[in-house]
Amino acid sequence: AACGGPKTPETSASTVPSTAATTAPTEPTPVPTTAPTEPNADALVGGVDLTGLTLEQASAALTEAAAKYNLALTVNGTKLNIAAADISLALDQEALTAYLTALEQGTEVPASLFTYDRAALKSLLGGKLDTAPKNATISFSSSKNQFTAVDGSNGVSFDLDAAADAAAAALGLLNPAAEAQVKTTSIAPEITA
Image 1 (tube, rainbow, N blue to C red):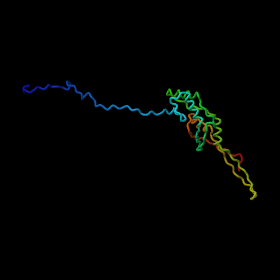
Image 2 (cartoon, one colour):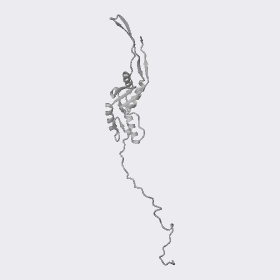
Image 3 (spheres, rainbow, N blue to C red):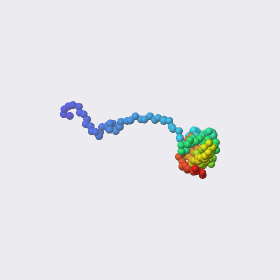
Image 4 (cartoon, one colour):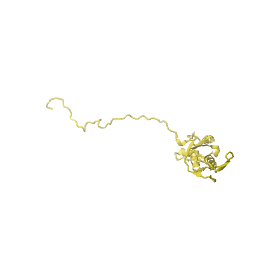
């Protein structure tokens, strides 16, 4: 103070509050967005969205969908069409009740909502897939006055249980298509040349 000028107060870092040391740079607050919600895939059965439907509404909608249902089944490359009426496809009311309850509770849903005639399905598959063996024959040519042996051919039998299982997995929830690779067995003719 001998200089005669104004005296400046001495300060230390501990006595002067510093806002720079305690305030962090702020990031912009994200604006909440509402993304469209995806429908629950389990709620869609045979093209029918079961979300929010009562048991009666779901039953009516699925019964109508089942009546129109056709399954495009491919077995070992052979394409087949299976109509609901051919296998007595019908809605299982108990399974539907369990399904709707599971959807509501967010638990695992049953794998099938429909019943069908398995014997009729296997018979239908067998009629379209299996081929019978052809026996060898002998033919006579009157112009050549000679007999000729005509070779027979093997038949093929498909594993119809495996094909029916593939169909059943699709039928249970009215999926429009299914594919299966199943075992086949060659069947020799009884008469060979």
